[in-house]
Image (tube, rainbow, N blue to C red; front, side, top):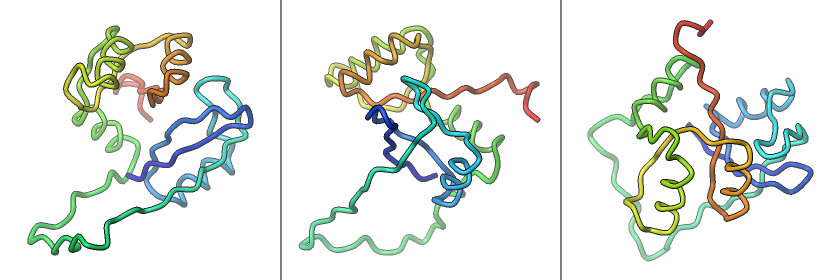
Length: 139
């Protein structure tokens, strides 16, 4: 997975997770991307920089192969579900606790209203809607 910082025409910033840069471009071309705050579909990637310290030696290659990337929607959803903690309706509260370092840093998922999502984003807390349907509805 690759995470891009995205921005809409109304200047709302949010993250998007994609299998590759080509996946982002393909979804954008097909009109599948929209802002989680205002639903605007004019989405652009923000420039990012890979920052490293020149005095730190690059990590040596591991004997283990890198973790496999999800190849399809089913694997991506499984990856998200297996690597996040479901905090349910406590999502806004827990996201704030993590942001303010009052709770351990970890990946969480849960439920938030549109208003709660907007408030979190305005507070500088990166959140992203993940509309994951029940497995029986996957095509």
